[in-house]
Image: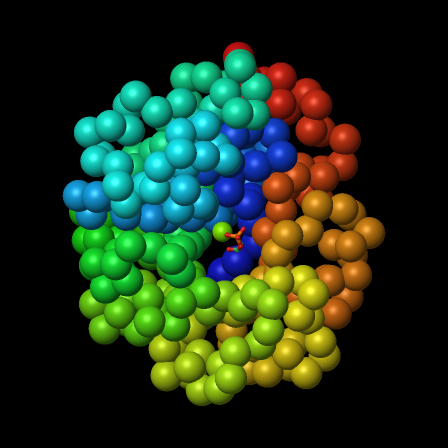
Length: 255
Ligand code: G3P
Ligand code: MG
């Protein structure tokens, strides 16, 4: 059984620092997060990197696909200025760099492999290898999640030791309870609009955890907890766990 906290930083602490950057991970740690979620794609040379969109335009201004970018180009791409010029030094981290940062910051990672990743088996293999190389053996394994059942099946066959989370968005997938059982999923991660008493009950069978995304307001968080949700992904992890700390923590994280 996996041990998830009530609040998981979403893309780090995406409301306060550029999403999926090392600064965002540091910001989440500064705000007291124990876990963070971030998204992974593959570069042209099959290096797993931390970015949400396949197209770089929104978070770097560069109109290119991440799978057309070579990992050697990452140091030239600005992944922070889109949010504010003060973040201009931020880069698209490799998964290895993000795992190293999590270890140093005392964060447990939830690695989301994006469903539109360029190669699903290659992505699963790259993530499994990177976790084995970079994540300390004496710590619990990172949680790997995906909307893609194919990615999850590849992960399960390539890395029996890594806990898996099944993601849902827009609609509840057919036969999802069967997949969750066969994959031995540790957790179910659902878009908040999909929540229902029946889904809560089914998700939590066999000791699985139920997490919802994205929750940024405290009244909403209280409601989800009352419905039996275990964890919430939040862009504002401080608001859910410690109201009012955002401003001072943001200042601390930016120096
Ligand atoms: O993993 C939870 C959540 O991040 C899934 O949606 O689009 O924010 O990656 P998205
Ligand atoms: Mg995500």
